Length: 138
Image (cartoon, rainbow, N blue to C red):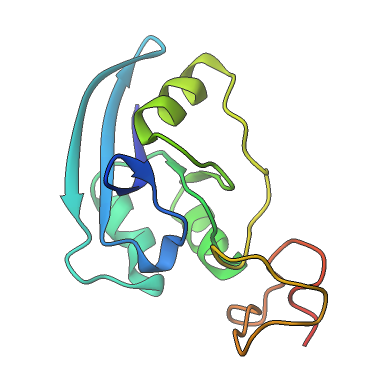
C-alpha cells in the first residue's frame, strides 16, 4: 500500500493545496517499508490528486484540505485522513496501527476561522462546503 503525507521539514504540512513536497511511504503488513520525499513539481490544488494517483497513492495524511480537493482525491480512489499534525513518519505509523488522530473531515485551510470571519479567504473551494462550522456559508 502506498500512503502519501503532505510534508515539510519532517512534519505534516498544514495546507494540502500549497504542498511543495510529499513523502510517499510503501507499507506492507501494517509496517512502513520505505519512504521517499518527492517534489510536487509545481502542481497546485487541482492537479495534486492526479499527481498522487499517478504515483499509486491509496491514502493521504494531511492537515487542512478543502472540500473540492477531498472530492478530487476520492474520485482518484485516494482515501483522505485530514486534520493530522506533527511528525509525518509518526502519523503514517499511527495510521497503519489504527491509532491516528485525525478530524475525519475537510478543513478549509491551515489557519483557524472565527464564525463568519474569513480574513478574505474564500473557503467554499469550488462550491463545496469545507466541512466545519463557520466555513462555506457564502
